[in-house]
Length: 160
Image 1 (cartoon, helix red, strand yellow):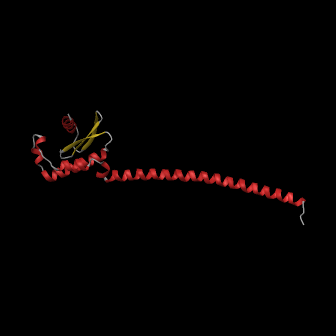
Image 2: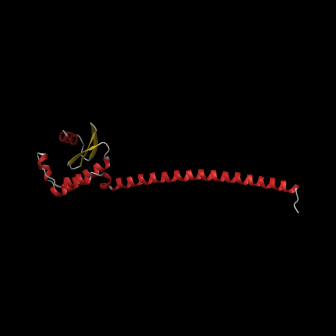
């Protein structure tokens, strides 16, 4: 079924174009180069399309370097062997490890979360500091009142 879908989608993709087609929870990413060589990869819906197209581009380049133009004369696509395919599939299992931009984006997202937590804790500390300043002002005014009261009380009685 996947082979049929991939072949159908590749046939319907114009040379030089890329497209992603969603079908039953999976996404088929197709890329057909301007020379007519194409490839497709099926992923789940969470896999980044950008990484899938990077992998397809690299695979097609390496395939062309290894096979040359012999692919143009092939009548059955299944007869073409390409051993590096397994390496690419293993390498691209983790999108953030395979694609530098995705890795940087994940690092930025993590840093953003840490900064949000830090800002929240600083704001929380600011509220606590405001509370402490208010208490300090209250204590200062109470001590001034106590001083005045004590001074007034002591002024009526002179001790010798």
